[in-house]
Image 1 (tube, protein in one colour):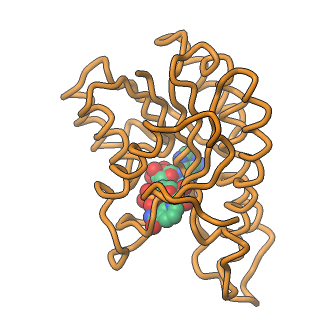
Image 2 (image 1 turned 60 degrees about the vertical axis):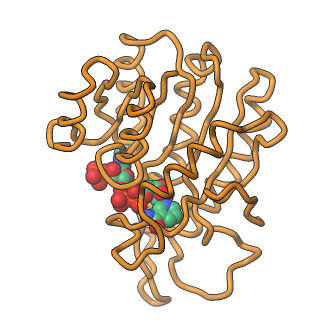
Length: 231
Ligand SMILES: NC(=O)c1ccc[n+]([C@@H]2O[C@H](COP(=O)([O-])OP(=O)(O)OC[C@H]3O[C@@H](n4cnc5c(N)ncnc54)[C@H](OP(=O)(O)O)[C@@H]3O)[C@@H](O)[C@H]2O)c1
């Protein structure tokens, strides 16, 4: 199957790319600077044409359009879009919240995935699996939030959750399933070294959820373990 993974040069995106290639899929690995993505370059040596490196900045609509043109040169359909790229403004205590960070997080974490889905819709419609997977976070759950801080990150991901809900209805007529998923607290640059699980563990869980998705689960919010996260 043909997968597109954003933010594929490190962290969860790199591990998704590794595991997908390892099981025989074709991967379009999108990242801001493929020429500096040494881990992806090494995978390219190993997997050749099954891995296509795609320049992509998800906060830039022109870059999203250019990525589509490149992918289109290699494929006339896409099975699974994984919107993984994300940023965090960190702990952000009240008093240090800025408009700039709020909007920057929204641009990457919320607007990026919906614009990607919109751009790639025709390729997904032509695909066999027809899935859109958006990396959210458990701390975007409003119902379970018990403290403050992290304004930009949590709100941008809560925005993503709503955008995905809308998207799930709009793509349903085409048989496309679209979900948000919490990868757990993962040992990456974003998660830090004290996080609970490795990228390997998280990605195995994510792919297990994605592999078994059914149309009735579209619009839902999953944990990487397969359980549902309350809104
Ligand atoms: N790690 C966790 O514990 C955790 C928990 C919950 C949710 N998540 C979510 O899981 C996803 C992956 O997280 P991670 O831990 O792997 O983070 P990470 O290690 O910080 O990696 C983030 C990835 O996103 C890319 N990215 C950032 N801004 C981008 C942009 N404008 N355009 C394209 N790519 C961009 C980065 O590329 P550059 O190298 O170019 O910066 C990098 O590849 C994120 O959406 C994150 O919010 C992570």
